[in-house]
Image (cartoon, rainbow, N blue to C red):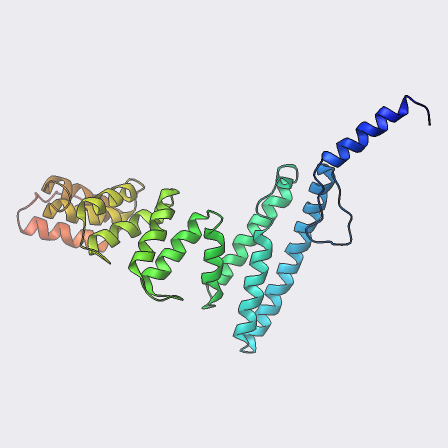
Length: 265
């Protein structure tokens, strides 16, 4: 061997040795590689394969449902979603963004179908996704505990998961927390905190939150009493068709708490 080739071969060997070796996530017959571009290509192929498998699993699950085999149907749906979820993250997605988008859309469609079932595995999926920081799953887990659906009713657990979802700016959690604190579930009502959560939700034009704020201002609960503010928030909710807000405005007009406008609310 020419002496000048030895350093080049040694350098190449060291580079390969120091580089991370990657295995295919769906094909054990493929050899490990240290080239990330090859690995990303393989992962994109695996993502397509898993989407096809999920499609087949859901079709089979729907057939099982028709035959009353609910347990097997639930297992099919849950397993397919877990497989799809594993491809909702990863460095390969940057280069293969079109396939990554298909995975996300496929997962969302399948999840919506799964949500319509009463499968107990939904709780398992919520926990799995929550562990990965998914705010939607945290919210669903929180509401499941609040209502005792799929788990033993537990207000403390509900509050914990709803708080985590809200901390990740999940809007529906704002409203849910407002209700928990105003109703005093698992603890004495704290209208000041309820007011804060309803305010965040109302700022996003949630009619129910606007209605709740109207009630707090009218009664001076958690905030200084203000009939003007109560009317303003009731009107915002009423303009969105909230029947409760319309009824409260009529009450306030009859009680002379506010002047009834000539038009509108």
